[in-house]
Image (cartoon, rainbow, N blue to C red):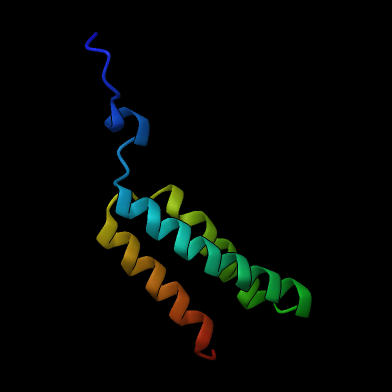
Length: 79
């Protein structure tokens, strides 16, 4: 044991950018969730849950950016 800190094992395969994107889109998702719950609208409620949850399953920063952007854009476009 070399006594150093192993960040690869600590982050579990997630890059710093992926974590920052997950936090950013998680905050957007939390706001959408609160809005949907307060107004009784299921679409922003479900999109908010999706925005908060997907970051736990995606380890690539570009894929995370694409999914988060698509879900965020879906909040602002009507059906």
